Structures are given as structure tokens and as C-alpha cells.
Image (tube, rainbow, N blue to C red):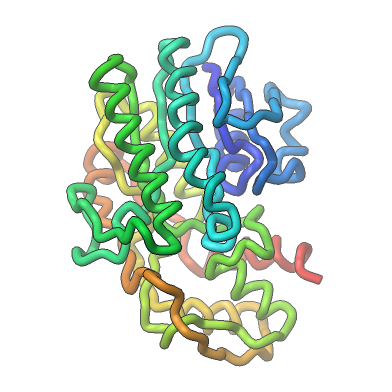
Amino acid sequence: MRVVITGAAGFIGSHLSEALLDRGASVVGIDNLLTGDLGNIAHLRDRDFQFIRHDVTTYIDVDGPVDYVLHWASPASPVDYLELPIQTMKVGALGTHKALGLAKAKKATFLVASTSEVYGDPLEHPQKESYWGNVNPVGPRGVYDEAKRFAEAMTVAYRRFHGVDTKIVRIFNTYGPRMRVNDGRAVPAFMSQALRNEDVTVFGDGTQTRSFCYVSDLVAGIIKLMEAPGVNDPVNIGNPQELTIEQIARLIIKMTGSTSKVIYKPLPVDDPKVRQPDITRARTLLGWEPKVSLEEGLGKTIEYFREKVK
């Protein structure tokens, strides 16, 4: 099995590359290192892993047969896509188009990394795949939300028009080792502040909710979807255990043994008030559900961040 992964040097892309290598696959990783890090894949270089530094918004050329194309390239945190709005839109649009073109040329199965952000600030809770979302296309988060919605539409168009076997995974909040310290998302932000004994910043009043899935659970679900015959509609992969942002902040402070205090700042524009996946489809079609408890996953992530935070 030969798999091409765009965004392979990123947080999830690197874990996905490693898991597929462990299953005996040959992996071609593509990344332009805009937000990726070669350190995430350095331990894979002596395995059946080929790295190509390339911007996937331009033509993608890979020699030899390819069985799967996994399109993971994209800035993925608010810090990134607010600083890189054009690049975010381009990789969602042009990058998806080029990755689909590779899959079509190689007669490969295509899997695109979509996101719970396609649901926007949802009016349905928990969110089922049938929900169309509540997204502000001209708000500051719109560059990411609409890039992913366009990527889904392009993916479906290639299946309907060109007959490419395509799959869509909608990823909910995921955490684990290899997240960047300055990523800007809740878990790395809280951990880096707590480990420095700085004030832990909660935006809004802290009552907005998120559902956090450990990266190994997410990757297991992605691989199940990748290999599931006939599953072409979007599938939510995430942990339905819902917590408030304040609860996760205080748990991280406790688990790190920090002296940090929680402080509150204004909620960013269009920040979703709730987020929880309905994973009925994943359970039914893939036989998947998360296994790693929040405390276990946070413990492993804290170990990683202790080495990174100065």
C-alpha cells in the first residue's frame, strides 16, 4: 500500500504518516513547511518514508503507483489562518484541486481532512453530518471555514463527475504531542501558560464548550474511514465528551501542578459557543469510537510540552 499525505510534517499529518508506516504502508509525505516542522517527521526518515518539500497549490507529481491520497495540508489554528488568510484559502481550493488531480491520475482513493468548523457557530447540538452549518463567510474565521467547505464541495464534484473514490472526514478538536507551543488553540495555549506558571487566558466567560479527542484515537478513525468501502459521505471523527473551556483550563492547571490563575479576555468574533460531534455514523459505519480518556491523553501531552516549554 502506497500513500501520499499532504501536510505530512504537521501535527496530525505526522501521526498519520507514522501510523500508516506501522501498518506496513509506504508513505510519501508532501509539505511546504509553512506551518509544518521537519522535527515532527525526523524519526521517520530511516523507514519507508519519502519526503517532498512542495507547495501543493501547484501541480503535484509523484512517480510510481499510489493507492491513497490524503489531503491534510492547511493552516489549522486561528493564529495561523488569521495570519495566513490567502494561503489558507489557496490550499483549501487550489491544493484540494491539485491533490484530487493526483488521485484521479493514479486511480487512487482520496480522503480530505475537513473540520467541525464547517458547522460554524452551530444552531444544532450535537452536530450531525447532515447539518449544513451556520458560517459567516466574511468574518475573520471565514477564510478557514469556507476553504474547508469548498474543499468538501470540490471533493464531491470529483466523485460525481470523474468517478474518483472520495472520502471526507470532519475532524473535531484534537490534541496530543507535536502540537506547536504557540499554536494558539486551547490545549497548547493552556499547557504552555500553566507550565510557565503564567496566567491561563480563557476567552469569554469560559462556558463555551469543546470536545477533545486524543490524536491516536483520531488517527485510528481516519484509517478506518480510509479503508472503508463505499463510505463516501462526510464522517465526524471526534470525542463526544463535552467540557467547558474553563473546565479544561482548570484541569490542565491541576495536572501540571501549576500555580497559574485563570483570567478572562473578550471572546473572539464568531467563536463557536458549543462544539460536540454526533459520532453515530462513525460507530455504525466504521466500528470506531474514542478509547483514550481525557486524563490519559492530557498526561501524555503534558509530558511532551514539558520538554518544549522554556
